[in-house]
Length: 318
Image: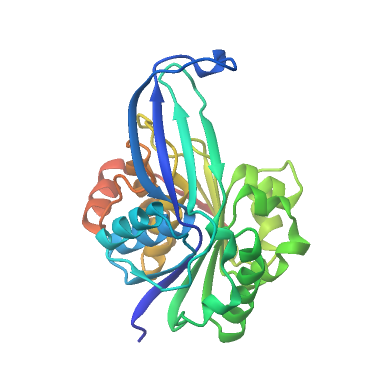
């Protein structure tokens, strides 16, 4: 038995959410925009996954890179509230990652400004502080210098037979199979959205065909999400699909992380494959009804109750 269930590795950031009361598509340079609501929360793929897994009752550690600034303190404060063990690493001279998300009830889409800073500086030396005696590694998107460090982590996981979940961003998917080979051949699970999947596969196909293309790259399990549209997954030779329940969406940031974490938690807790998908889905549904990537993450009791209420019908085919 290990002291921790999952080691999450990925970015940490501060997300600033601004709600404006006008059509964003009509904005011009020089316009002054009145913000009617503002919230600030921690974000980043690494912290989102760690918080969600911990909330679902797993013992979780996080390996990330922070700057020497106030934002890093805000990130750490929120993570402690989720009882996540933070691995001490040297601080980057760069600022902690941050983003500003501007949305409006009058606009279907958002404007997002992203600053990639400290998270790109995760180095080999930082791995020495990590105890890899875990059942699972959750590897979120790593860029900059951290990309090479991620390759080292994937190779180590493969050599030591540590189960690895890989959740790449669109940027990583655009690098293609050759550059991601070390990640993909080490991964037991690959979770990504439809656009990321098509980009990685260099294909406009969808559904079962796209699942098989990605599974051939190495991962035994592949899950492709598509927002409110049908989700597809494959485990060995069985293909699964379902349409998510429709809810009022407030903010979609963090939905993918909430789903992926819930799905992994279900598998670790020995749920059936279908129920693990349901657990991930209800976790994502909760998050998109609130502002912030960790609002409102579910505990296991809450998730199981919502699984009963939503009655998500999943189709499985050989």
